[in-house]
Each structure stands twice: as C-alpha cells, then as structure tokens.
Image (cartoon, helix red, strand yellow):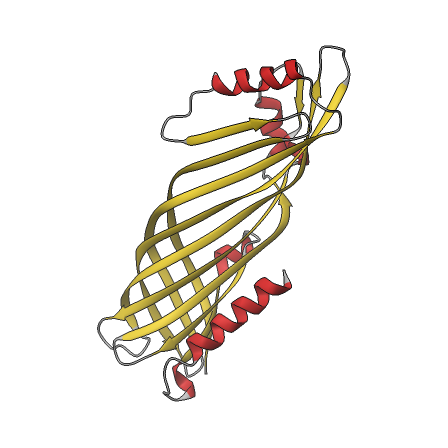
Length: 245
C-alpha cells in the first residue's frame, strides 16, 4: 500500500508541474456521492490555458462487505455440498483516472467541458471461505482470494462553476468507458483435494455457460485457480466540491 501511495503522490506532483501558471490555476476536489458510498477519493486539476486542463483522480475503498448480503444469501441456491455465506465476503478497491478537459464558454476552469480519460481499477477479494463437504462427509474450507483489474478509456461531459474566490462545484454529468477486465482468483483448500474431487470441480465448471467470457480453471490437490478475461464497460458521474488555489 505504501508503494501505491508513493506512486500516486508522484503522479500528482507530475501533473502539478505541467504548467507554470499562477497558483489560482489549481483545484483540489472530492466527489460527494462517491465519498458517501465509501469510495473515498481526491481529484487534482491543473489549468493549462484558457481551454485546456489536466487532472488526476484517485479513489480508494477500504475493505467492506456486500450491501444487502443477508437478502442475497437467503435468495441464493447452491450445490448442497457447498456452503457459501456471502455475508462473510469482503472486498476493497482502488482506481486512478487521468484526463484532459476541453472547456467551452468562459474557460480557465469555468463552464461546460468534454473530458477524454483513461481509467485503471483494481478490486480485491479478501479471504472468502467456502465450505465444501466431500464424499467422506468431511468439511473442506476453501479460502478464496484474488483481484480483478480493469483498463479502459472513455469520454465524459460536465460543467464546473466557481463559487466565490476559492470554492468550486464540478458536475460530472455523464461519462462512458470501455476496455478489458482480468480476474485471478485462487482457492486454498484446508484438506488436499483427491483426484476425484478435482475432476468434479472441473466438470461443474465446464457445465456453467458464460458467453463472451474467456475463463480458465486449474485444479490441483492444494490449489484452485480461476482466471478470467472479459470486456469491461463502465459509467462515470458525480458531483464534486473543492477549493481553488
């Protein structure tokens, strides 16, 4: 985590050095709706000239559970040999989004804008335990962990207002991005899987129909590894408030 923070701080300093305009050309903002959802973030924007600016948005979500996990758990139907309690599922995430803004109208950070952007995101799964009952009626705890990363590009439109000399309001009206996602999930059994159990896992997996997804499963006695590659689509919107300096 320390290395990630150092990388992000370095990126912010690089963006801040793009232009030599006065200090009033800097903005620090936070997305109100994202913060309320527990996905905390900051955006640094640097005005380059009347029509252009560059910005970097960083978000981090601490480890948390799935909303409405109890309702989801009751609605799930699974194999009777598998006990999967989604209430124990924990995840976290972080993302980094650089963009360039093209301002229309007044400019210099004011008015309607269009912003091409790139987004990198990483979602982490933390020690999710699935209980599997084998043919000998022994319970095997399989601890799942891993990550899902996405890289995508898109475009967003929005509008920014200056409220007095130091406060700004930035409305991300709507943005769309698309790219690729890759997941790697590993499971560590508490009891080594027999050859018959390994075969059962593979057969169950092959029976699942997942169109448009490239998914591979590798099962050994002491590890289950699932890798997945898929298209990725996302939406970007929000309302940010910040300061100008």
